Length: 219
Image (cartoon, rainbow, N blue to C red):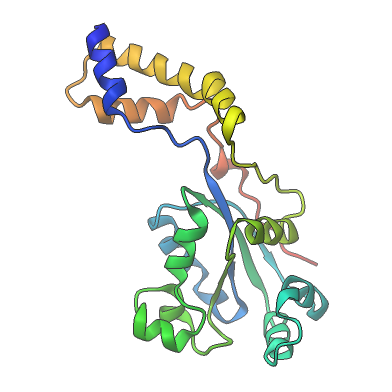
């Protein structure tokens, strides 16, 4: 039994202890395609942690896109983004920021249609301005964007160094050890799938996102 457990520990990949989050916006020009876009998001492995429908004022749009201030397209951008409702979502998965940027494609719809024809901007974007969706560029931008759209959201820091070791020792290792012990007792024909299912069911930090999804309509 000890040999089996040791073998499994060698074969299993290192556990991911952090699920990255990013902000996604379905812009006013694509709100009527909300269900289609959400289906694509879910099929790409994302979890929609929170969602709300908002109608931003021109001033709020100016604040959200403050880094674009002074550029020629800025007035048109704020006018467009305040022209109708927007769907804001917090998305979660491993490497969420990079995967979401890949899924939405280049910022210019015409270029997206040429180089990334399966991307969301290629499918739903109609111009450089009306490009259907928004994605945060990096972790700091995602943190800022999420706080802007979801002021009460908690952005968990990425554990590193000693804090990562403490997290593993307190949460990941005991759960994995319990799973490996049960695996040795059950001896399933497909140990990897069995253990994966067991870990999902016994995850001590499992978020109940489906039951707590927030859908709001802004005033």
